[in-house]
Amino acid sequence: MSGQTPDATRDDASAAPREHQATPYARDLDALRIGTRGSDLARWQAHWVADALRAAHPGLRVEIVEIKTRGDRDRATSLTQMGGQGVFTKEIQRALLDGSVDLAVHSLKDLPTMAVAGLTLAAVPPREDPRDALIAPAARTLDALPAGARIGTSSPRRRALLLANRPDARVVELRGNVETRLRQALEGTLDAVVLAAAGLSRLGLSEHVTETLAAPRFLPAVGQGALGLECRNDDDVTRARVRALDHPATHAAVIAERALLEALQGGCLAPLAAWARVEAPHADATSTRLTLSAILLSPDGARKLEATVVGTTDDPRAAGLVAARDLFARGARELLAAETA
Image (tube, rainbow, N blue to C red):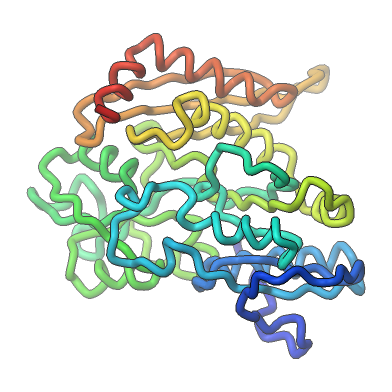
């Protein structure tokens, strides 16, 4: 999806976002309503999906419906205190269920692994860069940051990984949209911030990245860089339409990552990083190789458990479950128990 700019300046009425009102509507089979958060990044993603659907289904009328979520309304409380996963998705899922919208566009890292009755993850488009990005205008790299450097992030996973690699750092809670958080580093309020490379790319802000934080030191969040297209189970029309946007390799990778997270008690409090990738099969192969790497950490980064599993796209969920068993064998149960005590 990088380098593809959605047409946000269309002059048709369907391009104009409207505020969500929780009232069912008479279904127009030639139209589709997309529910999304109102941030710049969320709207970019929704417009990208809308453009892709219009290209796949000429004549389809697509409307963007902006929905305020709890995570958007409350910018002061930390995401961990609000409960983590679900704070950016629940209201949009309610709009799907009440018939106000036909399709939800989620950042998959925000979508809880626990299924919502009546809804299904219908498609996963090609994944953008899943890695984290450091913006440190003066020092440029994580290792070059001065002792006691102040680094901003709202993610417990990023906090733990930063402290595992730089235990001297002072990690600062950071809320707000991408541009607001980026500004903290560019204006020198903080020594650095860590953001998702995918979000910066989609917003045309990649020029500010000074270092890409890559494996093996850093792994992304489950689903990071991928979009999840969710609709009602019984909406065969929308399910058929979004099938054109599905990318099987990305879909398999995120199934493996999400199965791992679910096996580790869903939205577990201990920071989890995971990255599944699919490799092209040999000419005589009947399935495609899928490799899943995972890191489970204590919040201070002092304890770190790692696992790598090789599976296939035929059963990506199995790779996630095997990785979870491997982590449990290495002491994950004790680490998780310590975080919930």
